[in-house]
Image: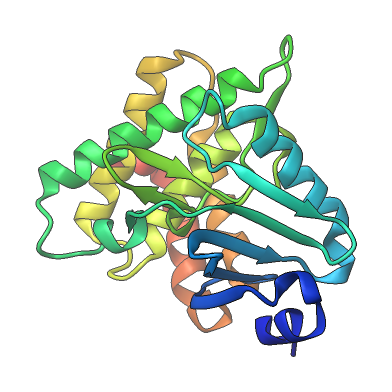
Length: 241
């Protein structure tokens, strides 16, 4: 398995990189580093994901001046590396699942999150075609005094409902899973997005149901509960909880 130290040791241009913290990533190696004492995020893509690296670069390069997304400092196509600015904040997943955070604050953050998706979808809309984030999980968002989005390697043409349903699935399946508070936050999130973009998303219950089933490949130990709630949401809808 690759280690970020291999990149640093084997490439002279990265000799000044000091790893501060390795960050969670399913596919690639991502770390908070300092380069010449400046805080940065280094994302080292696996060799087979060069296309995804260029995709992420293009999205960030185009959108960072208008949207709450990071800034690219460098793309290294030879080594499959992106270097971005480091944003100091708290991961949205940790906030939403923190028992000490009030429900009103969590509700406020889901409203801001809906606004982030609305802005993203609008900015990358071409005629009737939308680009979607493609990997809408709580872990891909940070809160400072605003919501920041990250990880655009899976951004593609799609339906906004895919992002909204995927985020609902993420909210519902982070611990504690499927409790009343989580359903309340999902309903608030959907409601706010629809307030901003009336009629833009359809079949939300079917899409959430499908998004839950998609998670089984990453979480086989949770297959039973994921299938259970996928079926329930498809049957009675998110408003039925």
